[in-house]
Image (cartoon, rainbow, N blue to C red; front, side, top):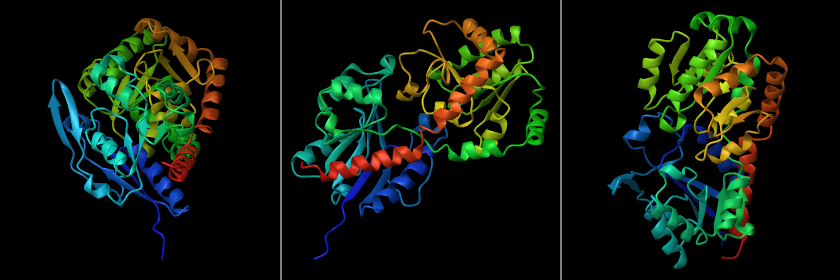
Length: 383
């Protein structure tokens, strides 16, 4: 009798574009060990759709999310239980708003598939967190068979919730930045000249913002900081690549500031072409995976020490591959700090070198290896 290969399912509310290479690589890595991988993904609601950051994988399985508003909170039902009956392990986002997680945990106790959490442990954005939701996450942290933690700091937080280190895998969260690094290395001086001519940025220093445009990113703060920066470096220009709810504010700001170039969403090829003009990445708000795009471009990032950063802020080391300014830093002081760095050639070169070195450490290949190893160990561990 032929033994059935183990089957693992990942359930995600949406498929983000930067996860495509990860899932493709993870599927192949698990196949090398005769383990099957399924990916069940839903669709974004109207608010999330504005970010225009979803991707597509031909072998993924679509489910139709149901979004429900209760007491000002958005809860999500992912109708996928029937499809998971043949799975040995189901990996879900550790979020109290995802209603399918609760029957999955109950089913597990009755002999259903093992359940693994993939997440932060607790909501790092205290201002937007729900006390009830965080309480639920604390109580359920130890109920799963395994934990896939974004970073070392996340693992320490999860251990603090009572989870054994033997059931934790630190995945070192990262997108695929190989193409960004390769594209940047291939850009020639004539191409840079043409890009400068196209945007009209002249020969002065250029700052870059890449990412979604929403409240936590502090876009008004960014513009105010750059206004101050321009008083010291009048030939400074800012390039913004991305989209989101705050695009309207940014467009209005750019209408009176010809040195602000709002390019919207771009392909990677286009993004790198324009990003190559920059000497520094400016992100005074929430920092997440965008820090790895900065590293891949060989650019240091400047941010502030905020309580609601994503776990990937751990990758940014002050004075090594970027600057992390104090929490209370004003927009004017932020602009002054950036101006000082842009005029300090030796420091800028050192931070840029640190960024390039960091790009070699935090890779999607390493994340795939860590994630696959965690899945295999979980499957081999007695229930």
